Amino acid sequence: MKPLQSTDDALRLLRTVFGHSSFRLRQEEVIGDLLAGRDAMVLMPTGGGKSLCYQVPAMMRAGVGVVVSPLIALMKDQVDALRQCGVRAACLNSTLDFEEVRAVEAAVNGGRLDLLYVAPERLLQERTLEWLDKQTIALFAIDEAHCVSRWGHDFREEYLQLSVLHERYPSVPRIALTATADHATRREIITQLQLEEANVYIHSCDRPNIRYAISGDDNGRERMWRFLQSEHPNDAGIVYCLTRKKVEEIAEWLCARGRDALPYHAGLADHTRRRHQERFLREEGVVIVATVAFGMGIDKPDVRFVAHLSLPKSIEAYYQETGRAGRDGLPASAWMNYGLKEIIVFRQWLSESEADEAHKRVEHQKLEAMIGLCELPTCRRRAIRAYFGEEPGEDCGNCDNCLDPPQTWDGTEAAQKALSCVSRTGQRFGVNYLVDVLIGKDHARIRDWRHDRLDVFGMGAEHGAAEWRSIFRQLIAQGCLWVDAERFDALRLTEQAFRVLRGECELTLRRLRRAVMVKKGKVAARPAPIASSDEALWEALRKARTALAKEQGVPPYVVFHDTTLRELVQLKPTRLVEMERIQGVGEHKLRKYGEAFLRVMREHVPAERAGE
Image (cartoon, rainbow, N blue to C red; front, side, top):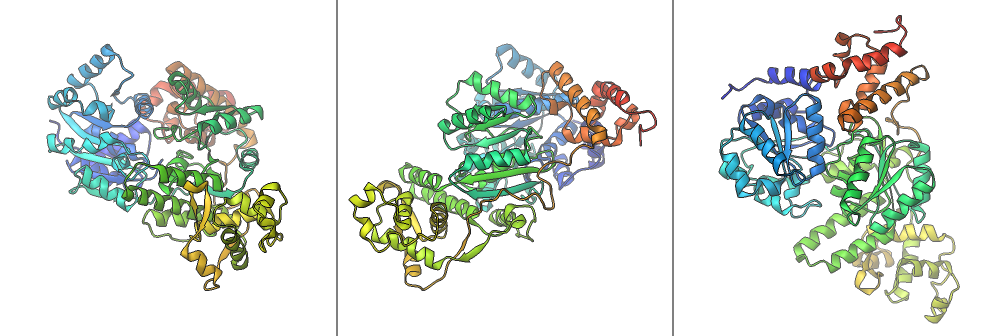
């Protein structure tokens, strides 16, 4: 067995293989633990460099590093990226035929692989475990470890069985990694995976390069279009919708308006989903419109926006989904529009769920926290940090509430009118009907119920229908109303509602926000534009990257990230020795691609400006 190597050796490997000059966050400490044979649990935000925490020590320790990964797309992306850096990596999953599996196993048997990515289902097969018994294993990495949580949004039954790794291979160090875990989920990861002796590394969940914006409006698609046109007219992004039908409608609608948009949901044929995902990964400016079937394992670094046209069911899900934007560290947007309909649908799903009462209670609490985040009048980022157990810190200056603080008002009287309307109509109607009564709308249904004779009829004419819907959303968020999904989404009064009606407490509400998010703040909504004098060079480098990626059969970002191309534009190297100083250019990529990119540089950079 090779002697254990130092973190100094790890730093040299980081530079020569991955092209990075220094470790970030607490990567060096985690790597030191694994090199010393200790276990670790790592909670690090998306884009924070979790993968390097196990990739580097797997290449330094004797044997092969085995990575448990829940998605085939994630495995393929990781393996493609590692091979581009000259790392010996492969995967075992259901897409491989018999001969391909034999070839991978032979490579492991012969000590010719540094990293092996395995789906949990295959890893847990007795045949696979018996085969691993005969191998020298450098480490086990359990990626997306939050999948072990029964209360989480990505629960995988197989993850509960991964404690077998500790029981069967007690001397092999293990590392569990995730970007999404509150206190309860962290405890569950440690308990279920038997990581009680592991060092725990928790970095802030904050993603300062992402600008959060949330609005409640009935005309969400038009608001989204204005947002896309003003902030991301040509960028790649993801639009999440609640249902398959809405996914299809929005994708078709975006295409009709000139955007390259593709649907993605579980109802599409497998080959269609694969084709759409490949286009999203390999082409520029493609927008994927998807249900949550699309997400985990998407490593595309240059996703500039994630838009939600439906309410996520928890802050964990929201954080995980928005985290797919800006993985390269450049500015990105997380935009959302939601309405009461999603709240009602989720409540109905919860009421009809066959889960036990404890599970329903947890899911209900998570939904209430998500609604509360939406209706919050203060800094969004502080609320997210607090939810995940961090000190909230100061206002971020880069969310909609910080950039354009919502107007608040004493909504006690309006709330009393709304709650009185619920009470006087018998607590049996939904929001739209109640709004019609409050604004005095004359139609047959109201006359049939004789609600046009109530004193609450027309009592709320001072507010428009959209404003009243916002008031009702906030009353639900503040616990004054609950939605009875079993009674056709009727609104019901809570004890808090009676306190408001009796005048025992006051309510502060936020005004309905109608404007598009303002363009100011600490971080721009888009990366800084390339200087006009460098635009031709920038496009030429992108074109060269695309051509090389097609030759290799990989997405363009696997060749070089946009951050690397931007540094090439800035520093304008014309010699290999100059190019090797660029972040993201390791020795293998320098040999493989260096001359091709330098030819582009020499064609576009005058000799007197080169190397400035």
